[in-house]
Length: 321
Picture (cartoon, rainbow, N blue to C red):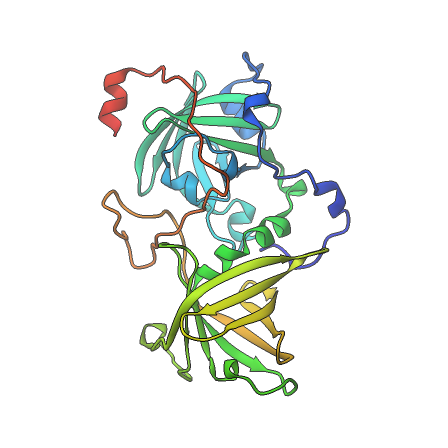
């Protein structure tokens, strides 16, 4: 995350990162520049996951917040930790690409080869149509100088909580009423599955996060606070106990503040065991490395059929599935 401060001029960003209404969009039939020039014309391409059309998924696009094209090298911001600073803002290198005749060929470091038909929607929006899963992703172009890293961070903070193996309590205020949560020392927010599962532990001073014994489990939810885009609510819904409610603030890329509403107690938690995301899973749905987790961005809009026509050779498409 580049910064945790409310930026002046945020009002001008209220229309930024809104989903493309593709069915009403005017496509540029004959781009005046080459595909290489088009891809290079913006530093960052934000993956508008809620604008996706089709029922398939392309793993590296499903996980990425942004992708960048730079002289044949493909970059992505897959994590919110370090967002805006990692790789000079571009993220990590995830593969190579070639672009020609409005076709984008990608060689991903884990997924291997994939190919897309590229359509220019408008001056800063492109559609990447994958003929092998009949799904279109829509990318919005921005320069690093006018990209609101903070907004993306807070708008996706649900995923930020999943980017550490465990969150360790490092501070408890000397004010506030005694409550059951005082005994909780570790929190874990799990990616994959229903994507809302958390665990908690009363262990103390555990050096290796793999050795933490998780006492409790439940579901969690992150909500907005009216009038404050940089403050969130966190609800821990324990399976066999009452819910716990907090105001969630981010101190930095590895520290969060939880204000316990009922008791008035303030806690700080520090993330341990950073998880570097490169993609979701392999073809069999199994994790490919120890640090590779089943993490992907969820489409919050209803999935719709893709009306795009596959113009690729049928045998080519079948061979790629």
